[in-house]
Image 1 (tube, rainbow, N blue to C red):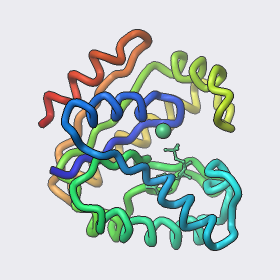
Image 2: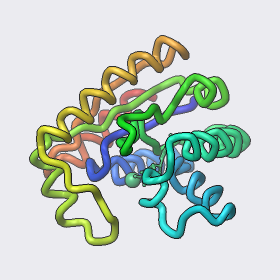
Image 3: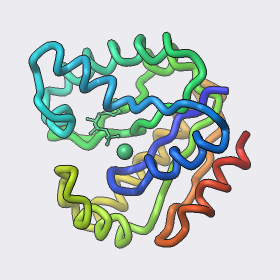
Length: 180
Ligand code: AMP
Ligand code: MG
């Protein structure tokens, strides 16, 4: 089964995925890491948070190259974004040509309250997170829901929203495990 997991930056989707992967003996492939490898090898960026600052056209090229690489990895959990917030507006993390290669069966949206997410971003010094106001975080989560259903229409994949509230990591992991 091919599972795609999405959530706005700072929601904790990587932690949720690690719990799921451990339980299921699956590997996680981070879409951003694969894109970073591609972009770095082309001399375009020095850190992963610079990817979303590139032109949308450039990001699309890198995104397509990453889809091919991930496809060749077989059955993995894909840690990615349904939408990426860029200067040009939201752009789709899984446009049609990416979906056609990845062929996901399940789409998981990890969510939390905008207030929880804003606090987590402020605490994470290892990343250069954009400082969105809570209203913008809420808008980003809404866009992810809309586009997730569009991805479902294109692939037949089911969509499940899983909440990763404060002190709720174990519950979130259990909810994703229910999907298998
Ligand atoms: P992450 O560490 O998961 O927040 O991902 C880091 C960066 O990788 C994101 O800010 C995006 O620029 C890029 N990225 C991840 N997944 C995708 C995708 N499916 N399509 C385009 N860009 C992506
Ligand atoms: Mg992550």
